[in-house]
Image (cartoon, rainbow, N blue to C red):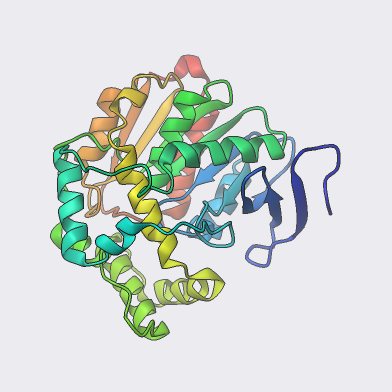
Length: 334
């Protein structure tokens, strides 16, 4: 039902994706967001921020339920340009210029080397700083003064900015499979990069699109834990829920336009747990180590066998790791 006495518009109903969560449609001053929330309203809140082109459901029900069972409220939401949240109307010439895989790879190579990308303001629809402001607006709408934040991949980059720019709102920080994009860090493995930049079929054939995304998951996922049937089922669900490749392109440009976060990391004062997979082919482990060196009060944990995903067999284990971190008193964190 609508929420009154607030500049934001909120409608809620039971989630059709998880029977233990409520679905929210939230209208902020600029955009509309789809969000799900579960857990006891008296429990501390963990806000989950997902990565590049990934819908909120990639935070699996198993992972979310474990956090809730561990004594937390959980919020997962679709970033702008993805899933059921607002899609931006922006005629971005760079999307056309770099539509070819070869030009995308050239742009990514320059980014990794720390070279100037020559991106003008008119070509960039938004940056990760804008996406962190989206979260600030969502917290305002939900009347949440403080919470913990857990970000994965691009979501971890947004979480870093959020912790630095809104320190009064973020108690503790969790970072999973992410980076500060420091120049000269190891690039993605070639097969992962090719899978990530696979162009959309000209005829937009649904089966080919699903196959391409399945190939990406297989390439960057945890090699010993990849479940083909589970991945196919989830890919079909997400495709049917809302497939929007333009949003993926714009989010990639947002990462490139934002650049290195090393200066941001030096501003982060919250206790931080950094978890990275030893088998991450998209962001190799050196990215996690770089974060651990630049963020004060950070602990780093490398997980054998983990890739760039949250595989079902490790979902509860990963949820327990972050639960322990968020529960640990500040004085006990080194």
